[in-house]
Image (cartoon, rainbow, N blue to C red; front, side, top):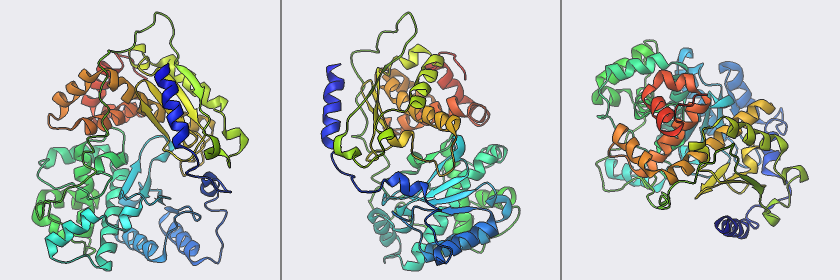
Amino acid sequence: MNRLALLLAVLVALSVPAWSQSESYLDAVYQVYDNASDTDPIETLKNSIRDQFEIEIADDPDVHRWSEDWLNAVKAVLTALPASFRKATRMIYLEPSNLDFEVKYNGFNDQYGIVQMSHGSMFPSSVYTNKFKATYNRMPSSAEKVARFKYILARGMAYSFIQENPDIFKAYGQTITYGDYPTRVYGPGAEANMVVLPGKTPLMIDLAFAIGEYCAAPSSLQSKSKARYDFVKNNIMGGATISGWDYKPVDDTASGTTDPGNDPGNNVEVPTASGAPEIPAGDYMPIVTEVDVGTAAASLPAEWKTAPDLLKSAIAELFEVLPKFFSTCTQAIAYMPTTDTETAFSAEGFVFVTQNSWFMPSFVELDDAARGKRFKEILMREMALRFLYYHPEVTQKWKDTFDKNQSSYDAYIDMQQAVVGYFGAKDWLKQVNPERYNFIKNEFMKGTEF
């Protein structure tokens, strides 16, 4: 346990006081709508979009708020899209951060149909602008940045449509030739890592990019791949044509610039050489503890500074059903009452869950059961990495089975999402991706199904 004590000490030292303010960020998120004024033009525009299209437009007014220009761009996109496509989206949420990823879709639990737009969708990274300049010999105009935003929004909405229409997605795979269409983003968040869709495959990303380009630059898509153009028109848009939004696709081969988020490399944890922990004969539970993060939690309500009883119960319930071959690779779980980090992270045999893993709203109201289910999925995501830390042979087998050229980092992301899908959306995963379903069943869970 010396490694755990050392890691906790480092975390406590690093967590002071990067985020101390009089009001909690969580309070602001919970009050997204409560703080709005009926006479506020931004709220009026958000409400008009909701009333016309039955899609909520949400943000955190104390952190990162929609502007009128971007809301008008949202409205233009929704107006152009057929209702049959729009109906799979129920909320468009402005991510309350300046992270440069473009768009994220979370299809698990109660987060289905929620498209999250980030800072990077509005303000292109230097990698993108350099690529644009190499393609067109100039920088993108303001209008072209808006067109890019519209394209990204349509691409994000595509994932909610794909989740609601798995049969259409399967037909797409039988119609087009995968691999001859560019599906790259140019920012720190690669598309493969920003989309959390049960059973997500590269083919889903291919279809989402095709849908986005059909809307934003239809003539470009038609010249690149008439098969994709025809499929999107006939099977997704119901025959409707969209005149385009003057989006200008960049040329992947125009310069030597690369996407720094495509394969971080150094973020891949080196697997242990000591072998997996010993599997006990009886029941197994990891050490469950709490971390004092000092002034980083000074402004939080007292009840948030210790692990909630329901969180502890969710851990117990999860370990009761998991096979020990998988669960014993997680040796300790520590609760950290801080909003400074993501929902969870892990190292060696230890998983650290933060306040955000339990109290952070998922942009929809969660009852205790839904909150517990969401937490279990977050925990399963990190436990998958602990398992792979002790079982590098499984990573190699995954690559040999699905993509021999896949980086270890991308393989980890791929397997994490498959594990969460196997646990939280088993019927969907079995339907759209039986190969990944069976791999998780056999290699991770040793035949246990949920």
